[in-house]
Length: 294
Image 1 (tube, rainbow, N blue to C red):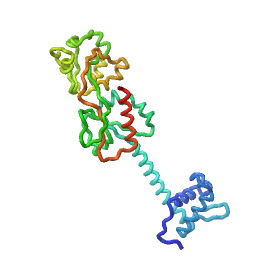
Image 2: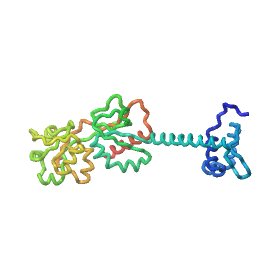
Image 3: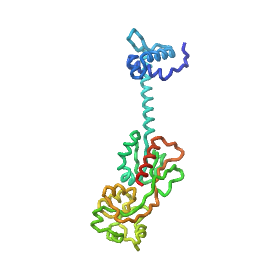
Image 4: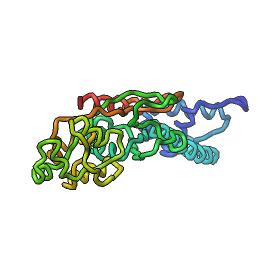
């Protein structure tokens, strides 16, 4: 007699459920990748462990007993939930929620999204664009690209790169106002943002005695650069954000005078939380992208 406390192997329960669902040991073997005799042996061992008959065998004909039907139905539901949980675990391990500034998301990352997807097809990347410093735990964010002088002490950080800042405008705007020397900017509209490198600092670097009056302040770098593309004025462009526009001819840098940015780009993630392989892959990809631009 089998012990009342004997627990059958999970594999034999799966084999039985498959055989009961198909009504055939042969079909069950084909689904599970084992032989018909292997299925029969697993079922026989399960019946011996449980002390009940699960099938009635009459020659080649196979019929599930009432006890077998009840067990198969319960196992079907349990196995379905089990495989669903496994799939969810696999998916969650491949999900990476990455925070970055809206300007970085729109003007640098978005044009490279196709490259990322092609090189990392198994990663479900979710971008959250925000100007505030996210709370990683409260907002469900795994990592971030931060633009700051240095990272916070409670974060693991990798320095991705630095940049320079210089005036940019559309080619049409440059031709219309004949902008060929820094003093020519006195007749231009100067678009202002909120980065530390401002127009007075640039005019000092250019050797001008005093800067002209500032123009409209748009705040977000993405909006400022779009205004420059649309021939609305001259912006102080961060080199990371204007590289694609310059390469495409939408913007030009009329003067070879730039400021070193006081901020750098950092890949940051909370300390004490082991990163998944997907997060490590995202970090490595970003580091490669920043290296490629140098």
